[in-house]
Length: 299
Image 1: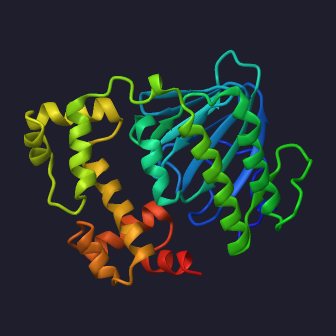
Image 2 (image 1 turned 180 degrees about the vertical axis):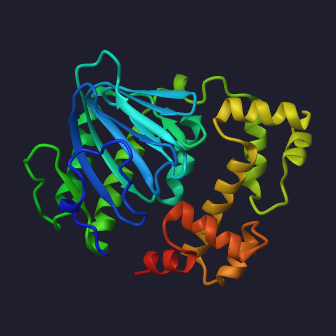
């Protein structure tokens, strides 16, 4: 059954489900103390937030990301989380979008991981706040059709209907994400990065389909498997095998976009021995099965 903007709650409440995967849903909220959402099972889609005023607090497990003005904070699908107006803050004003991320975005966000599936980009330069806000505003307007105007009512929420509206919305969000990550202070990127972790990431990126394991990656950087796994998770906010799976999924998405290989061959070429497992994890990440992803990319 189609989901319409009017079917969605004006303000998400604890226990409310996230929008179904595959939709592009966006809005802006202005919330006071007491507002919060708790999703122990995570969301079915990615959640992007960009704070314009006040402060929010986003938690994934024991990790916390403080959402202040100009800061982009992102949650991946399937990771339990909570977000609230930050304690002591009078308000939290922010743009948000639920959608399926394009493959390139995960590599852009990776340096800013603070936990498994939680990414906090340092605040963008103040001169760019207006441009990033404008990109979110275009998403809201384009959801009502190209050339539309964002509604002026408080807390507007919009669902992008049709392939054109969805593509326009994702292009606008891509601009916002790229502006945020590309202008992040270099001193804040990969704070505490370790050369051995970087080398392991390079090994994965060079050949994501290779039969990597925690042991083989650890041997490649001259560490014991237990020490390597702990160091990698501490520096990147995700386990080595999670990083490997994400790299394989990005590789698979690029093959689907750029080649006519069958889904079975894409799976094998990306390091997934089982096409059934590949289809399941691909759908979890991108919201659609591989065949539908390819068809959507080529329309």
